[in-house]
Image 1 (cartoon, rainbow, N blue to C red):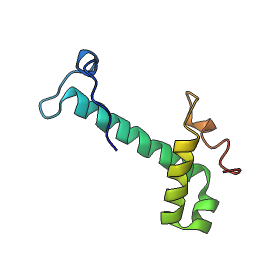
Image 2: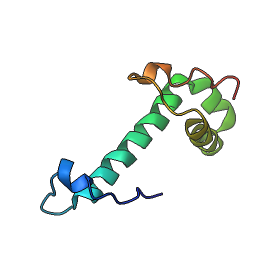
Image 3: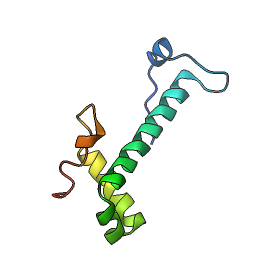
Image 4: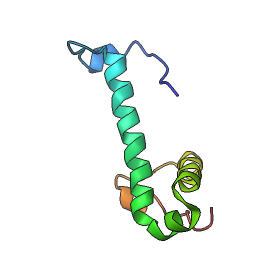
Length: 84
């Protein structure tokens, strides 16, 4: 997936020597996505063990898309995981 380019990005994020403002934002977004998936894995190690890493990764990604974080803390991220 890629972020949709937005002209406002360059107004808020400086370019670096190697990356445009948009590329820097994409990098941050990708890192945050991975952190969300890591957080789910940390909160549900038993489910991960039962499903196996690949299947758990698929379920976690679908869960994170269906139930995006609405809290300032990742602690609440898995609130609906059991029912999912």
